[in-house]
Length: 213
Image 1: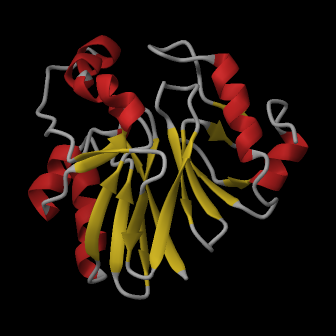
Image 2: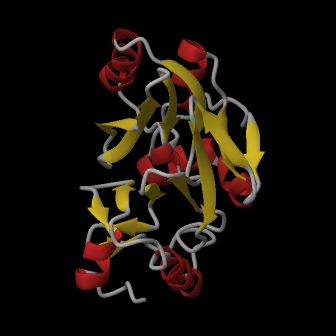
């Protein structure tokens, strides 16, 4: 059984997740912590619960999902693991700071590993499988916790909405195909989104005009 804690971060209200199991191992997904109090809240939660961070994962290469990478390296020695299809975007994180937000550049540590679609990520007694879902970005992925009916969709799928495709490398055609892939998951699959509230595949099939089985 897994425990999921959500932290809403930065100026875009991005969702950062800490996922742990009974072994106290945990993974951090999409660490968008920009402000010091956000970084501190995540670290305090991990330490106060005796958790052992094993991986820092990014669903894609947009800066609002990666603001906290330096802090997680400093606090826990973790380098972000990101989808290989977004290598170019990960290298441009400082540029995104300036282009999107008018911010000065801040340090972004080198990516620890670029993930292939068939990689399996382990923590505690659990495995995380990678579902390639290009469209919002060229290499966007969804992380699926095996056996738990839980996915972390980044900016591919939201409650009653989907990710935008007008940014670098975006493609509506690819995104629609990715949504068809997600639609094959069981209805009860809980979707932990990159922004906003969580949902289920079944609810999105019933109410989201972009979802179709």
